[in-house]
Figure 1 (spheres, one colour):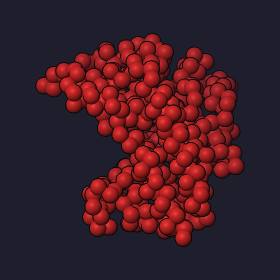
Figure 2: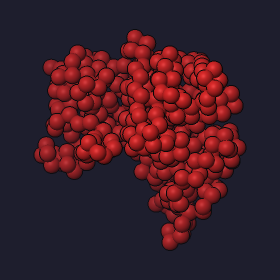
Figure 3: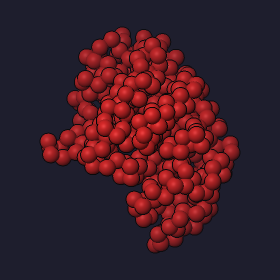
Length: 382
């Protein structure tokens, strides 16, 4: 299977779009494998949903009227999320996963002909959504591997000021996907303070800062409290990773009521299903659920990383539910990826010219599934 990119341009006149990875069925057919042998190490999802979800959906412990739309205010879900995150009800907006939140932020705050800053490497959707708005993507480099791929504060500031009137949005991800790294203490606070100072000096409005915290449960405390000092901060949260309900598509925006009001203008009706609302609202109050699942992932992440290191692979530090593995060249990474695919193990790869094109990214999955990949690493190195 050739290396693919998650970003594609259908034609010179159309904006960038997302290219979906090969399905399990396609991989099985291409390599002549039984479908049950195919394991996805590329999507950063959990190996299985919490038992509580299975009980709710299979055990029939709650009833939902599938013939009806969900309540327009998502009231019960908002109440549960507000209690979990320690914010007011009016500081929250529900989305169909964090991806819909990102899309709504782009529609609300990036005008046609505008601009947004994207520190790279990071999640490709930030650039895609900016491009789809007919806006300029200002890509600025992060610091290198030796500095944990941390944000380059000065590069971001320069990127914002590189367009007349300043960039409209700054896209941030912490912990960052796909590097798996968590920003050093105080780095985001310092950046927000600098952006606020620059805007005041230039006599313009500070940019919207979208901080994507999809993996925050694996790393530390949320930065949503910083919106008190930087009111133009929007934090995106999701239940896809730590809560393991990616298929139900539940996410949130946390921001000031003023920004939530602006974003709500673009929110489609009923994009989060009534089943998703009920399950998510039932899971959020469970104090032990995420704590135990995150602890299990972190323990397995350490074991998985040690196994791959023992096989001779170079595994980078991670504050997420995935590992970034680097090789000596893009060609070696390609060879390894192809060897894994032949075994039904699907890694995340990076296109030629990408800052991480010499790497693959691997989701932490179950012990048995991870052992298959460790054994493959040993065989490939032999």
